[in-house]
Image (cartoon, rainbow, N blue to C red; front, side, top):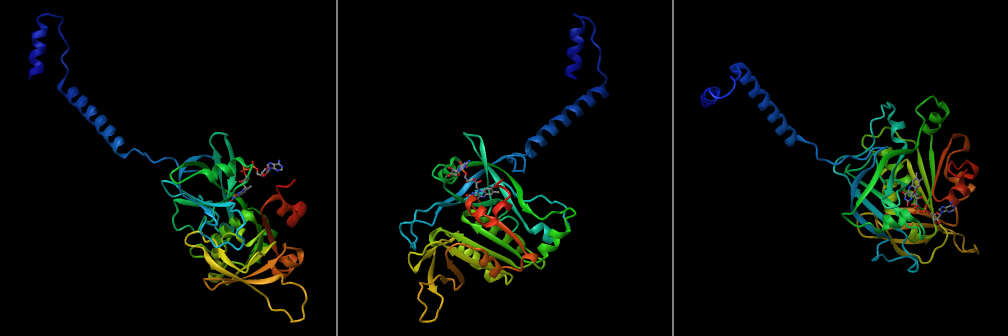
Length: 352
Ligand SMILES: Cc1cc2nc3c(=O)[nH]c(=O)nc-3n(C[C@H](O)[C@H](O)[C@H](O)COP(=O)(O)OP(=O)(O)OC[C@H]3O[C@@H](n4cnc5c(N)ncnc54)[C@H](O)[C@@H]3O)c2cc1C
């Protein structure tokens, strides 16, 4: 009404105005209301979640936990051994994991090892790191890594400096080993049989991940999985309680340990979550007249688990003793370059 009166008054002084039909006015109001409604809906429902990491896209996660291993309170076998590893747990604001690859064969999907690439922000370099668990995580928003510190390594020193609530950029998961899903019949036949992993240093992360992937959830029948794990000393062996627990839970899993030196017979081994676990090294019985000092031990853990431990390095006889005949076995090697070269020779994929 007011609008009509005003228009009439103006019409006496200026050019006549076009009267807008009532239906058009209604239409305009409906359009305006619809736009406003759409705007409010967008505002309320907008996706503020930060992007999650993809194999080809970095996303920022937050450090939730960063602890040195072994922890300071540990009763080390050798008190002079400097800790070189750190457990780093990062959290995303959503579930992260392996995209559905459409592979029907559940065993083929499980027998894979995945890594994430972490970026150093100031140098713009990235390095690969292997989450300790992938398919078997109880909290699918987190990833845990075991990181070795190299005195002159840019990325590992950066990761060791990170503290809880620090941001960290990573992309993945990227499979670093998986069975061929194409026409590779020999390989498929092989893995239906036993699989042996030779690991050293942080290569143990690949063993823990593969064992846990293989048995995650409703696992089908899994072949025999053997892990031969070498470290320089008892104090640099990591994840021993976790490996022992996997062996206890799954009759198809066997774990053997190798160290190059033994300083004492009692100490503790680091556990990822929880206090260090007391451990005792007992020499295997020999005939009383046997002259040499013992090289074969049993590592007894406070949990009641027992793992065989050999003094020295893994050799071909060990591989023969622990795994299936050569024709049937698949052997994965993971660790520092020197270890991979010693174990795999010119078969070491990255050592060309
Ligand atoms: C698939 C995959 C998974 C991995 N998973 C893990 C993991 O879970 N945990 C982990 O700690 N590491 C892991 N690594 C190793 C990791 O990616 C880094 O290589 C490691 O952290 C060292 O990076 P850096 O930048 O600190 O050291 P770098 O700067 O790369 O140097 C590392 C060491 O190598 C020496 N070096 C560097 N370049 C050369 C060269 N050309 N010749 C000889 N020596 C050289 C350096 O002096 C130093 O001692 C993984 C690697 C791969 C490929």
